[in-house]
Length: 299
Image (cartoon, rainbow, N blue to C red; front, top):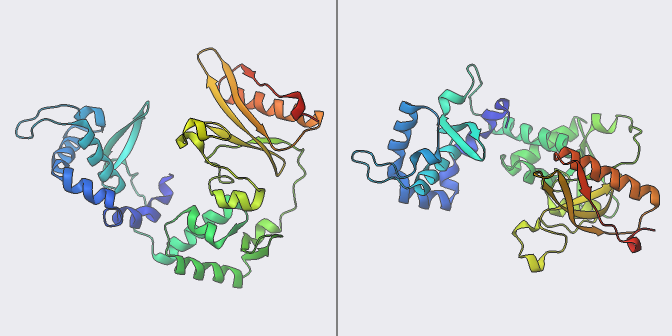
């Protein structure tokens, strides 16, 4: 997250313990470790969870990295410590005051400022979005205040409401976005991350693109439809299929483990798909890709 957004997340951090049963339970179980962890961070500087692994200190007993890691995360989510760097997948934590840049505005945002921040971020991230979807984009603001700020934007004509064919909800867009000329771009294939703004809200994706999509990494293998890490594929603004891919960086091979297509393709479209996969392979530091397209799937 950019530090310029820091003040908008302060209310979320300050209310974390009261909102989370998980946090309350673990604070009761491991909260006695907090003073020692803060003391070590203050004295020794940035530390990762592994630095607390099985370290016996006078009067403190044996450290178990799992409870220590839990406490580090509790302190992190409250904003008392922050991630100053990473070592591989390991977070390196430090006291918040040593990570926050000097001169940064750390005054908590008012409820109205917070609602305006969430509204603008949702509109700019999605382009076109319903109120329900706004509340899910950044769930930081009170919904009633967010709706008031949205209505004010509509009244001032900064925001334009719209009805979409076949969808009952009202959608909204920044008026300046709608007034921009539609760019002329060549038809292109887009391979999307499961966490792309276009995909992350599954109900929105289904409403707008007809995509019945689920991130299947947490689904048992025998119940998966599109694959462990399936990626939605669009041609222009049409959802045409899913790819389950794996990058073998040790030998530079990009493997398409499973491809699921929702319609047949013209030869020109097949070429676009292959070009997109080649770009995606290169993006993942692979020099070769493996793709098996069944002839019956190609028109």
